[in-house]
Amino acid sequence: MSTRKTARFKNASGEFVYQHIQPSAYRGYKSLKDEAGLGFLIAEPEKAVVDFLYLNKSGIKADDKSVFRESFRFQNTEILRRKKLMESAALFGNNSLTGICRRFCDFIREEK
Image (cartoon, rainbow, N blue to C red; front, side, top):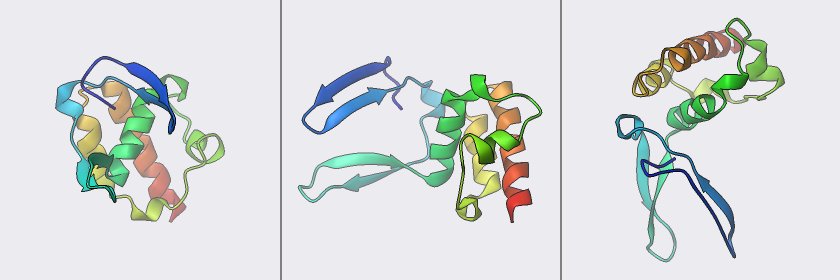
């Protein structure tokens, strides 16, 4: 995810795609350093899920929670905080995404 325009590049480490999101939604990342001391950002679990749902929202039907288990195969959802999921979704200002995240929260509540 990036606040810059969507870009794709390849190097010896692999292929990388950076998808654009609005600056208001660019929150929920931790700053870490690798073994060489180079800094990078990594999304918190809830932010990673919301970003994934945002990028895939066109494939999620309004009333279908089964997609989370059967198509996306979400697992280990017990570590996710529902409040943080909804806060991350609200940063996008997208009603469709907010509804999807609400259904996802229902899904993880039912999975317990």
